[in-house]
Length: 293
Image 1 (tube, rainbow, N blue to C red):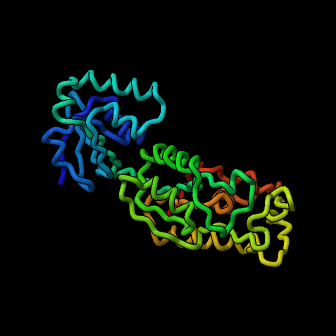
Image 2 (cartoon, rainbow, N blue to C red):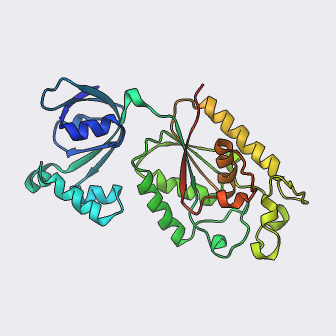
Image 3 (cartoon, rainbow, N blue to C red):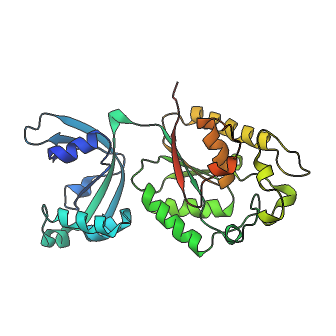
């Protein structure tokens, strides 16, 4: 179904250039007809001659604009500013009568094919500086808070698929990111953390942890997953999803170790070989773009 709406020049142009991805309205009878997957045709005021078509990706319903903005933004000043701006168009009485809605949209003719990667939230082993590979450690309290924060940051991104490591700390993070979004999640062993073998659970200060991450030296250990084999695992995974999910914006929820070869896949292995500097911190995320052939 295609819905029609009018927009002033500024928000119209921001949707057109991709900087505005959520349209905020009263949840009146007209807006109650909108469903995820519908299309909206926006016409630019005042002439109504220029039009753009968008797809509805998600719907965020709340009682007030203030509550809605608190779900989406983290900065209090921004929340207050945006709330006040909405009262230039709608009265508090109308807000109370209808409630409000945020309509997440994507410009159809400008569909990007991006890859996002987020590291899981903090665990107790992260705090204790213990090597955490295949050990299935859960998030701690701060880890849950970090996951809530990154969920807000990613809310404006058009994520169409989540691929997640099957380890608990990643799964818990992905579920928080996906709360109220209902994005399809696939669990894939290929982006589980590197197997650190005999060093699992040991504090990093008790051995040459840096040596584990030298791609050029390619040090050999009894049970540790070889670093070059690890890179091949991640590179093969990325080659696969590039073809299998062509055209989709994908979020990987994974581990600090995995974020290193992902970075190198797009940017190359650095000459200085200090690969640990490339690792994402807890609940950091990065964005890359596949070159679509």
